[in-house]
Amino acid sequence: MTTGTSSLVQDTLGKFRTRTATVGVVGLGYVGLPLLVEKARSGFKVVGIDRKSERTGMVARGESYIDDVSGDELRDVVERGLVSTTTSLEAVAELDVIVICVPTPLTKNLTPDLQYVRGVTRKVARYLRPGQLVSLESTTYPGTTEEVMKPILEQSGLRAGSDFFLAYSPERVDPGNKRYTTKNTRKVVGASDPVSLEVALGFYGETIEHLVPVSSAKAAELVKVYENTFRAVNIALANEVAMLCDRMGLDVWEVLDAAFTKPFGIMPFYPGPGVGGHCIPLDPHYLEWKAREYDFQTHFIALAGETNRKMPEFVVDKAARVLNRERKPLNGSSILLLGMAYKPDIGDHRESPAIPVYRQLRESGARVSFHDARVPAVREGDLDIESVELTDEALRGSDLVIITTAHSDVDYRRVVELAPLVLDTRNVTRGIESNGKVTLL
Image (cartoon, rainbow, N blue to C red; front, side, top):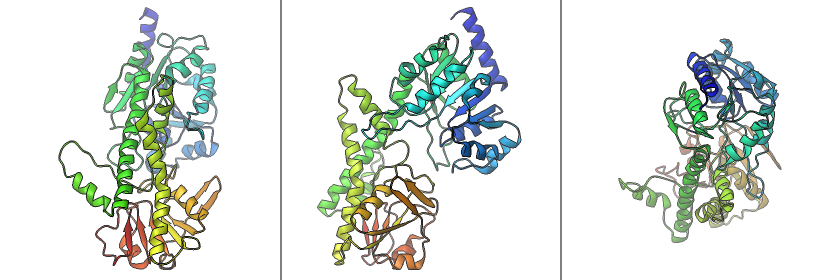
């Protein structure tokens, strides 16, 4: 490390310690907004940057649109003058830290789409100055930070590790989790060089309780996709066992509950109508795609994705069989889905398995509606649907109710009592006397 670089590092770390550094968070979604609030609560001045003016406007007014950020918390840091917002990346010139939390979707062919990462990085490069830290938190394939971002940023004439600092620290947001938050969830940090790692650890260490440094940005990127691939593979195993138990006439929930009593060598994963959210359905495909560059086939990952994507079709097939036992065809039947969110007690329906279940039921001729107090409407592609009230009439008037999300505020005893038939894909009715009206996944 040269004398000039050493001085730059110490100046930057000093700004972190004294909270005189200004932090920019690019992308105010499920990752960016909680990070913005946590940094502001720690005393940093934070600039929220998002191309959607409705988001920046709401943040500026202290109005939260994300379950994990309370309006009171957001209003507090806004009223204290610690948070400002903008839709322009020109603000980068005035920042000491730029944390990038933009979407990294997949194409229809399940290949990574880095248009947002590349676009933001190009604009950051225009305003980059010595001493700034750029940290990517978006989920992506191993190599993105060093192979995609670094060359773009160095087109500024500045060099990573000596003039500016470049890191990758994957988000570990679990929407709805009240125990583990941005502050107390262990945070992995990797960087393109040792100097950048030192600076990144100094930045995150001021607000995050426990840091886990790794040797490179690429290692940190692989950590993130491995975490969610692990979950995807094990959920797929549970889903496959569920389909096998269906063929064998066994109760998969009984089998799994008994298996999970073993105190070692196993951990609970459960089946469901599919997988949803911003991570599990997508992240494994980043790794699958990158592995091909090394002439390596990720068989488990591919098979897990295929198995999980089959589950909505399996649910629709089982719904048809449940109705058939009552001499009712799926075509023309009235079906009510309970839950459109991808997991319990949140309002996020990204990649929710309830959506393909809804579509496939409708394509089969069923008259489909849904109730979800947290998801008032779904407007996605060909869908423009609104939640219905969970009235006695709605339950009695349905030929079949399918429980697709296990929200805790639904009275499932009432559902079982009033609905003619129930298909429970989440095992929330177990223990409720049903007189044979309930079928488990």
